[in-house]
Image (spheres, rainbow, N blue to C red):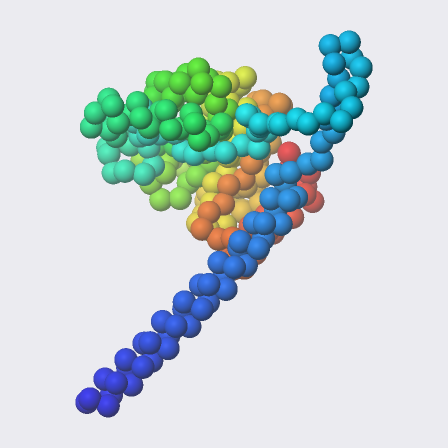
Length: 270
């Protein structure tokens, strides 16, 4: 018995060491890719021309430049600004609820958000914006959106399509296949149209590869591509994105996600 226990302990130690080594290798791979992506996506060449008041070039000048803004977007989920907009805590219908116990806490959070970020993700989960069919309520979304605009913070809407689990209203599950498809299209078109000119970036489809979930009667290609067409028709100037989670290393989910992107390119999905 003692020998058996020692063997198990040795095996556990070996597996733990292997897991740590594997985790370290994955971390190093991710960081190496991040370093390359920073050079590729976050930086660009610039030419600065220094002239005097009459427009004449200034020679041999020493200058100091402090960057105060960035075209690269640094964003965070903004629900804590004035409450939770759904999808993360078990409140009935995920209705708007405050998350701070004092106003001082919220004010401090707001100050830090403005200091750190120039973009905010606003959740518009269907189960919270339309818990009752035909009676959408965007009051919580509008309050957060107004706060962002008052601080010159760009916004991204998240998300138009996410049918995994309880992220759609209960009434939606009771519809027929054809009714669900029509309701989904109406949902996408209505929201994008409502916020046209106010929210110009959207996560159209969320976590399709991870959840492996579509609507009944729809292929993965239809489920992921049709909402992009509906959104683009509703706001031709909007920047549309497909959002994925959990996997940035090689995996079946990542392979599926890459296939979705290839299908988009093949079908000229905007």
